Amino acid sequence: MQMNLDEAATVLWTRHQDISATNVTGGSQRQFDSLRNAVRFVMDELPDLEKDTAFVQTHDRSYPIAEIQEIYARADFRDR
Figure (cartoon, rainbow, N blue to C red):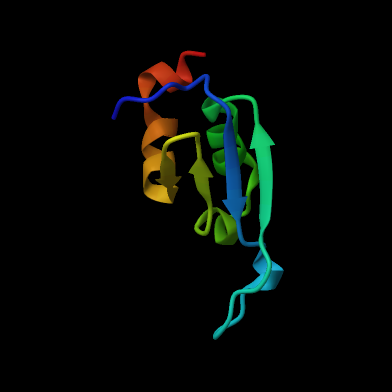
């Protein structure tokens, strides 16, 4: 997977209190100066229930949680 870890990114996710058995309401977003920092936020700061709803949006791409986890595990991600 080729990507620029230094490009700006936005994390979007649904807060746990906005999820019910039949409905999802609301949501949150936060902007980051880099994809690297956005991925760190998702993996290190979001609670598990909210992490599962998260995705990261860059200028030309959207990354669902499975891809966020792959990025987080990459050696070139962890080196910085």
